[in-house]
Image (cartoon, rainbow, N blue to C red):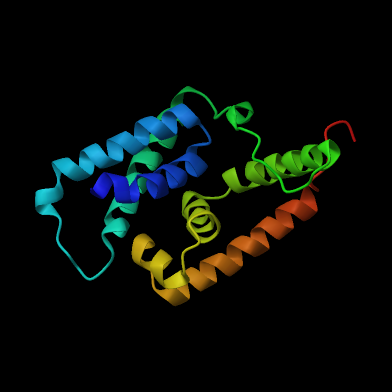
Length: 166
């Protein structure tokens, strides 16, 4: 029952942190395997159960990145083209190229900032919910969010999002 309730959210989080479908599937399975192996030691501390799962996922993704950095970089070509709202093929192409460029910039951010953006924009969580998952106050989340957006703005200014061949 816990798996069915949380698997999509945990998978999305892991996928956006790794950018690789197969690794995201494997890591998601490991999150739930680890949770079930340690469910007896889970203590309700007044935060949502999902916060515990996100922490497990965060730790596994951090280990995954550390292990991968010793071997190779994440291939950005593995990212699927996410659908856009435009009807014209040109609109879809521009949107997917801009999205790929933005994802590359986001992946250069420190892990805590990547986690914040995923929880905020992919999982659509409030600052209070994000704070519970990240172990920070709501004010600290707001501050980190502000600094992250400023850093992204500066990166975009330094490396404008452009189409291939321009």
